[in-house]
Length: 356
Ligand code: NAP
Ligand code: G4F
Image (cartoon, rainbow, N blue to C red; front, side, top):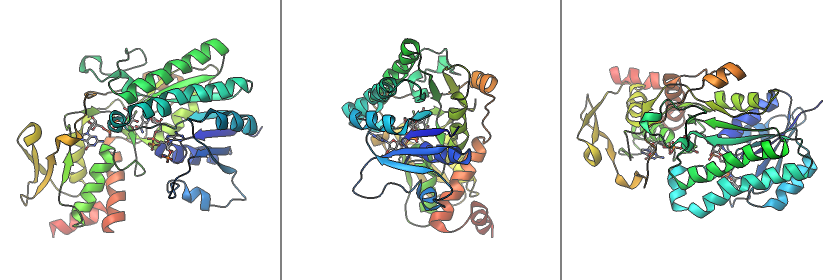
């Protein structure tokens, strides 16, 4: 039987990897895209350009805050699986646009679940839940499915609603609905204002002489960073089980933002020497003394999730899922992609030129 997937958020980082993954498994893939004044399909243009006769890939203009289009599309497409990835997904920005975040990241979830229920309740449903639900208290790490929730942002609070309404529709209406509680996952396709991509992009620009230095907020925050390509496979595996359930996906490694900065510069053969603390902290090129990194309190958040470190044991056992790319591999992949794009060379080539 032809499997049909509907992906909300298909133009985002995860949506683009998931579309590739499902098309590779022979799925017919439908994605919702929002109308923009300028094209926003850069992450899926390679799919759109590929041989249309061989793949079944369809885009529909829609918005998850609009229940009428969700009802109509579920009725028309009759998806076997629905992956709800659409969200205002930036935690810092959620403090600036809290009401919209509540709508897009929270209330939209019930609109989609209702559209599935009213249309027979037969689509399997994946909800993009998040490690932001945990609040990142150091004493709770490593966090697992049984760690209490304590969201610390409008984004986290909106995702908390989405998590529980997903559980509620599973228990009330017997819908095959799963929460993937995913820890941070990154890639060369990561949005440019998330910290990992901001770092690799800024370093590439510094090397190319297009940016003076990298300015960051809280460099003490710890994250469990994995590769997005690994995580979309975990989403799919959740929907292939006999029973619906909720799972943490993580690498079981944690690093500070500062460690990510050090590792990214290291790819280019640059050692960072740190001086000062708090807003006075600065990072210098240990060899040349050039200022590379400073702190701008503008990037501090009103409340911070300090310590995320995930325990993926349940997913590893029940789903047979395991991350393939480790922290070092992720940094190499992202740094190399940005340096090639901006400065036209690989990290190895730059590191060698520095030695000569
Ligand atoms: P992303 O790159 O920011 O992509 C978000 C997607 O949602 C984009 O396609 C965006 O469309 C779409 N979208 C936003 N509001 C919408 C609306 N009202 N109607 C329709 N589409 C809308 O996010 P991501 O990193 O791929 O993450 C995917 C999902 O996983 C999100 O729900 C995120 O909160 C969650 N999550 C992510 C991580 C992570 O580390 N990446 C971890 C845990 C959970 P436009 O292109 O039009 O803006
Ligand atoms: O990269 P971030 O913006 O990601 P954050 O806040 O962890 O959220 C991401 O992961 C969540 C899963 O845990 C997802 F649910 C969510 O959708 C998103 O994908 O920030 C990471 C850390 C934070 O502690 C932040 O305060 O980096 C710190 N940080 C320090 N300087 C910075 C900066 N973050 C950003 N974006 N920009 C900075 O200049």
